[in-house]
Amino acid sequence: MREFDAVIIANGEYPTAAVPLQIIESAPFVACCDGGANEYIARGNTPDIIIGDGDSLNAANREKYSHILHCIDEQETNDQTKAVGWLLQHGYKRIAIVAATGKREDHTLGNISLLIEYMRAGACVQSFTNYGTFIPCKDSFTQPTRKGEQISIINFTASGFSSQGLRYPLYDFTNWWQGTLNEAVADSVTIECKGEFLIFANY
Image (cartoon, rainbow, N blue to C red; front, side, top):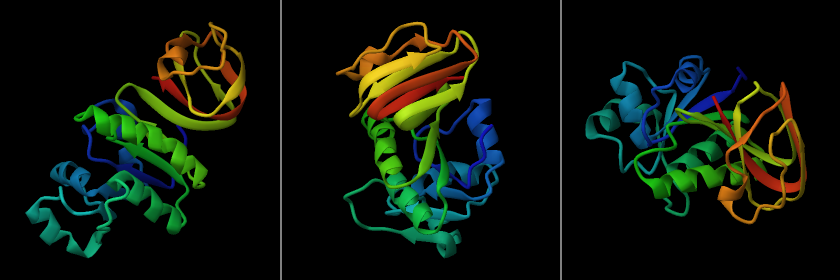
């Protein structure tokens, strides 16, 4: 499993799958979005920093952890983006995000699409759910796979797609659903194009 400089625990559903839980357990630095801190702390942990506008952190945690609470009041970005920005400013570039999905579907879609923005800002970021990993990519993607692994491609700005190791040929998708539910047929997958896209690799 890839190593990360820091892990962000967002305010979606707390993970139950082994992969995101292992990422949390092995994290060298844990940044909680303010609501995400409630569950992390309830499980007997102490975050390194809590970041957000403070609106969803309970009163007891707000008082007890005020020394590591970094409030950012502006409402132009969400707490996940505030956490990524803080980490980048402090030299953390390899970032894993967990608990960014579930609860509200509009927040889930927003958090997923924001991965492209974080890549543009210089972060090497992945978002881990209970089912797989979202990876923002530009121009190319190569990764070891297992035969039968489900791979989805969500297009943002890319064109000229070609691939190796996938069951179904790619084309220039114009809607998110069109690149979903592909499948690895080799020990690695390579995707080439020009532009930005997301990979979802199922565990």
